[in-house]
Image 1 (spheres, rainbow over the protein chains, first blue to last red):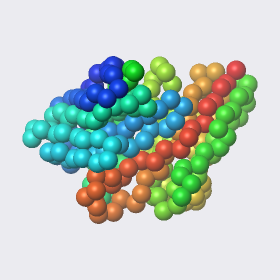
Image 2: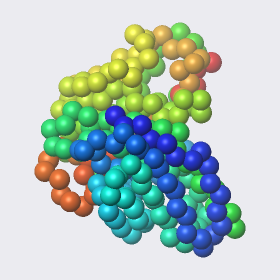
Image 3: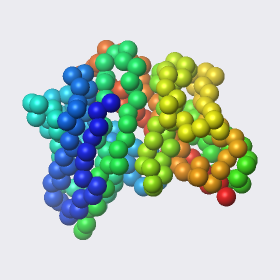
Length: 114
Length: 121
């Protein structure tokens, strides 16, 4: 499974856009990039997943360059409630793949300040 | 749907005692995962099942840990005997059937339960 590297922590202020970049230099052809969010005392929660280019949903956007060796999670106009740990993971999502497992790194602790 | 259900939510036990953690995955999900989270080691995958069959247990720390999935709606993680270093939050997660990708970006999303906070004294 490809290893990911992301900043340990980030600070931001309410209303700002936050971009968290993740490096995954050894990403494989069949790997997807997935981001999870974890609040204190809760289990991780899926945010967004992508393979290439840009993916956007109601929560975030995910930017993936052509070489796919990195990705950037973008959170528009963060609020205090976005304070959480954000995990970047890569893994094979093909049907019948036996690598349904995900390996969580240390994640990025985002602190949003008023 | 009620989501992934775990019980108990909190468990305090003495060293040497047997501990059993329980998980009910979301109905229709074919994959079930057990994770352990500590401050020192982060979130670690212990074992996962596909269609009730253990696929990868390489993350199980030692023989004191065992996991079973007797049917599609129930799984247990047992620690016997428990030790103080087993204190952690244990999460169960489930994932839908590995079918043709929907293109929505949410295929194989893992749905986590609320966790069981285990304290071994």
